[in-house]
Amino acid sequence: MTAERGTVPPGERVRVHLTQEGLDDLAEFAPGLAMDGTLVRADSDQIILRVSVVDQTVGIMTRSLGQDLTIPASRISRLEQREFDRRRTWLTVGVGAAAMAAILASFGDGVPNPELPPVEEDPAGFGPVRAAISLVLIRAR
Image 1 (cartoon, rainbow, N blue to C red):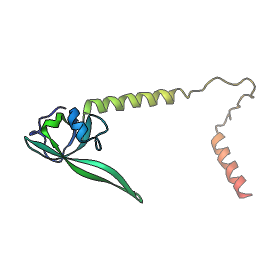
Image 2 (image 1 turned 180 degrees about the vertical axis):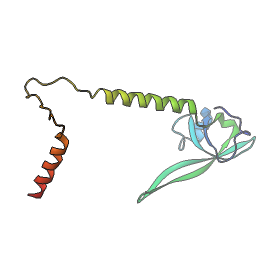
Image 3 (image 1 turned 60 degrees about the vertical axis):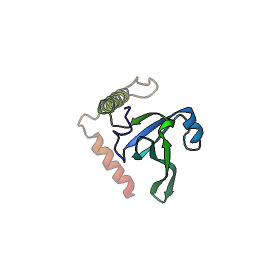
Image 4 (image 1 turned 135 degrees about the horizontal axis):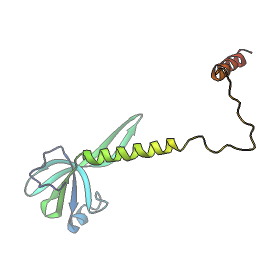
């Protein structure tokens, strides 16, 4: 969502779209015309943006090392505030659930192989119990 510099509170995640001059100044930190970070402070002349420089992993812990960049207002073409979109999230969850249901439904009975002998069903229904007893007897030997 496009936002004005004065309306975004400090601590919020933002995306800053730079002008070509801004890109030339910050080429080390901006891979393209946009950079993501956390807004530290903003006024009419400049913003201070904390960007992630490197992610450091020690054991099972990961921490992000950042740097504060001062970006003049003349080098910013647009500022966007990152926000959670519930509709898009639920749409993604629904599509994922439908895809998973389709995958699971595709594992049906399938086509029987004519080269294999037919499976005989146990008329008393003790198939799983007999298989469990067989496994216990095999382990006991």
